[in-house]
Image (cartoon, rainbow, N blue to C red; front, side, top):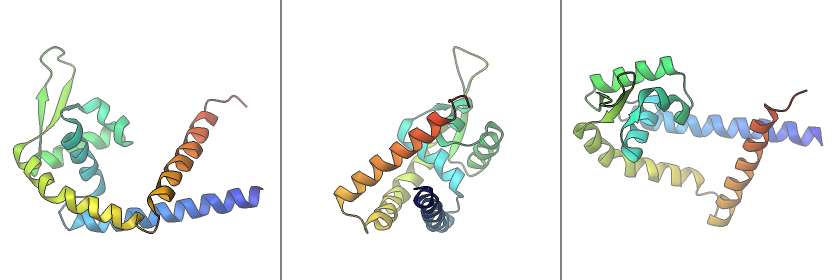
Length: 147
């Protein structure tokens, strides 16, 4: 059984690396790295976000978020907004230029992702989602189990 588990891990990690490489090359065409795209995509779909919370949502460190938001600001795609009710909170917000940019590139990104997963039919994709969630949640829960 552990041999199959090890093989499963290897296949999962190799698949993830291959997918990430395809998406990284795709993002380079638009002058973005993967993290910049992830932050911009979050703002595009979810609206203004507290900078302190972005890292939790896209799984990067708070120090990296500051750097990424700085880069997106320099490109004119995002801006910082002070929270009117709490001076300690700063929001990242997509600009009109960022909105237009994402309106242009996001459909192409969706096509690229669909192309990656086109090897699976809809039922297989749904099964993949369920299995990946199951393994991911089990792994996350194992962090909280005392040895």
